[in-house]
Amino acid sequence: MFRGVAQLNLDSKGRLAVPSRFHDAIAARCGGQLIVTADSDRCLLIYPLPDWEPIEQKLMSLSSFNAQIRELQRRLVGYAENVVMDATGRILVPAALRRFAQLEKSVVLVGQGAKFELWNKDSWESRMEQGGGFGPGGLPPELEGFSL
Image (cartoon, helix red, strand yellow):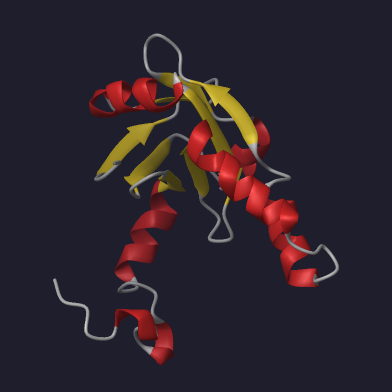
């Protein structure tokens, strides 16, 4: 389970040093094999390979005759790249994905349970300042009655 927010830097080659607290879990879950893909929020999603595969299979089993499904397939599967965490815990974030998410040096890695989100630091801070992004509709119905 990946939790927490880490402010990190990409090096000049686009490599990300994954925080050491996640190394053992990633190694045990997928031997360091990860998938990085684009998200509609202009961040990147990073999945252990075994957690990504059923998502990809389900997406590709949907009808591509539906324009919204086809767009989601293009984004998530089309941008998906295999990466391997090296012995020092770094992954190379592919250039096309860095451009998509406007990642430069300062980034934020956000644990989201079975995956991570990787954000441009300024985009992340702006998003958090907006107060959660629920908009005028308020909380989704699934969260009614939810308590912390």
